[in-house]
Length: 204
Image (cartoon, rainbow, N blue to C red; front, side, top):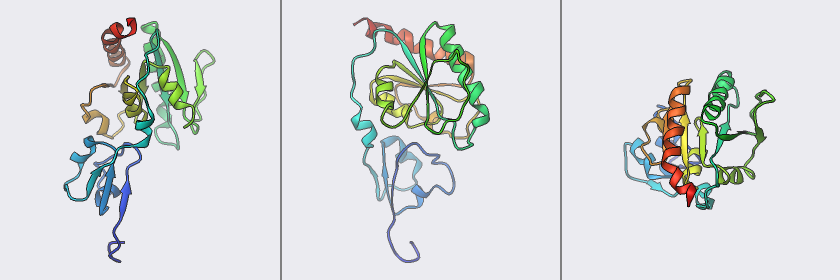
């Protein structure tokens, strides 16, 4: 398009690996971003716009459930890190059991995992996920837009990355409500920190 002198516009749909050297959003003539956190990944300020994301504007801050309920977002799809799924999910379930918390595993429509019958697993899609977020107090996820959608609901998210995904986006994001963990022990600590902070809200 540049050779033809045709301007290009790219609209950000979700979190991206902005440090990828071939990231197409950074080379587009006009970039529409979903939030101010993304601006710092661009080496220019011209023609970079924060437009928001309709996914987040739909979310409304509703009353928290009476008891803690953890949503585990299993989205290991398209052969990307699928070999780490079982260990990752087990970490999440073990952490909830250690803290005696209710949980459910929300599976991406393209997630092909085989889960133990003892796990509380429900399927998800674009129409179901809002209700799932709404009935949760904490989200545990790997790289996913849901982390920000949960924050839009006024809840906290944990980016759990024991398999060392090489995407620094969430690791560097210091937005309030995003916790990080990379092991079962640090995941338990992150959940415990959220619980201690939210207990007063749940009593209201």
